[in-house]
Length: 317
Ligand SMILES: Cc1cc2nc3c(=O)[nH]c(=O)nc-3n(C[C@H](O)[C@H](O)[C@H](O)COP(=O)(O)O)c2cc1C
Image 1 (cartoon, helix red, strand yellow):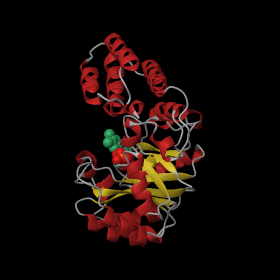
Image 2 (image 1 turned 45 degrees about the horizontal axis):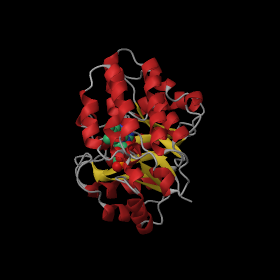
Image 3 (image 1 turned 180 degrees about the vertical axis):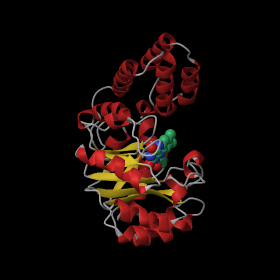
């Protein structure tokens, strides 16, 4: 059975997005939420916890993710989440952004296996299982070979691997040969993540890596929300463009209720279109037009025009 998970994309795949996505587009079995972190030591923003309240996550099971280099901070958030009923938490060891990684968080921790080991020992007290989302290394792909023996010492529920280094950010190709070695060396279930943009790519990867336990898709699904259903051979019912329009309109209304001021609403919607424009034939041109809009009214007019006039890539076939 193919297990598909929605990748965490901070700034986009919040509870509102995940919920609307799951009701409009079938195929995902679960999602990992964008990371939570503490500030000023061990404080947590209530709004970020609200994102993970069970009532806001009714349509797609979610695994919360925590970004921390200090195990005590992880435990503070972990306890709150365990009290909400979560039984698995994901530790972010992949974030490549310099502001994060330079502070030895996310992929910034990967060159320090001994710190990762003592971190895992300390958070063991939490009544949850731990999964890890990692890259192959911060600077070099070979860093992963010092990390896997440590991961193997702990009872992790799974290891999600994005086969790039932190320095690569999202550029260059994924290193499938190193991923293949990780698959042999890791005793935990391994989830593959990276650049699954269409059905053919998924098939190539699934044929090459039959041992992979699950597949995580981020940008590919944000750009083509029908991809998970296609991978799973699920029927895509109704008018596809209408489905995308209804998904979009719902997001727009919900963010209009939630966010204050036109610039926040437009900012959020433009972020979504950065990916969603990829569903359309003339995606790049449409995105430019959307990015230029300065008022909510203009934005609404433009998006209505797009949904009534522009063709989806999928409508060509
Ligand atoms: C804008 C953006 C935000 C992201 N936020 C997170 C995050 O909060 N946690 C995380 O583990 N990965 C995050 N990622 C990485 C994705 O989850 C995923 O690993 C990456 O996009 C590669 O998968 P894809 O090619 O299927 O998109 C983010 C990526 C992008 C582009």
